[in-house]
Image (cartoon, rainbow, N blue to C red; front, side, top):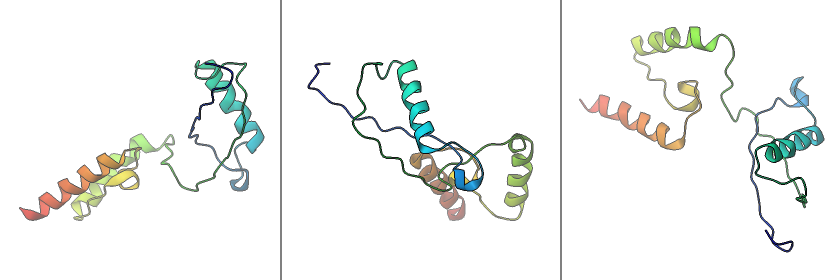
Length: 114
């Protein structure tokens, strides 16, 4: 890349906020992110960071814990037996794309058409 060329990187990172009693401060998060991008070869150590903007989005992602794998099937089975179709990112408690959520909604709608 030439010296006068610029590029933009958008990075998403899951971290607990300091307000919630965990996580790292923004400066530390930025340092860790840049270090990770360098380690992956996306940035070079000589690249200049011109600006950074950190946005905190509460509850943006489903966060797995050590109890999820064991408990999720029983919860979803219980809900299904009650006629509740728990779908989407939070309904299935998994990280999924918008396309997957749409397909899950389509699947439920088709079940009601039968």
